[in-house]
Image (cartoon, rainbow, N blue to C red):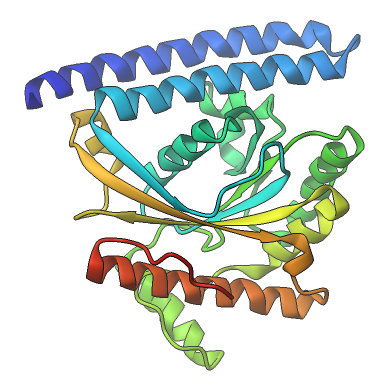
Length: 290
């Protein structure tokens, strides 16, 4: 079985890369629609994302033996939301695709992406056509481009799941230690399973989307056993991965920016509790509320 999964992993990976490059060509061809109908242009590229990301989900769940368990709040259909998640490895992106597939929102996902990736064929070029947000991790440099994307989303009434790893990077021992030192300066209880979130971008996203935004979804990702690495997906290491979803209506969010930033920090304190509970019992509690 191990050799079979490895072979299907390699073959599936080659197929996904080749098919993505082919989809890039279709996306570039779709530019001819743009002067005539922006709506049809976006619908076509949404279908491209839904198709290719759907293949990624099939690859992971059906062929590579990853079983994704989703618990928590039910999510309304066709709701515009910011999706906040903890981040341990690149495989977290794939797990969130699995959640998007379940909710039929794959094509609505908009990601914060490193600016340099927009020059990369495949994923980078594909995301250019989806109005994803390319950032340099410098608020002064990124602010204008972020506001431009949000204005386009609102003005064109574009459905959106804005995907955000508020920690800003993957958790590593060194980064966790830096986060703990920073939390000490803020008189916050140190966390061991998540890092302190970067609140400026979160506040800007909530304010920038304004009335177009209906909810914030907090997704806590936990792995049975060691964290599933992206390379293990290719090798075919069967694993259970759990995601616990909490939905917060925008009406529940604080009005002041400073209070909203504190709310985000408290959100990650709650994530710490959720992950601690999972580590102890192998399951998430029914509800941990702010």
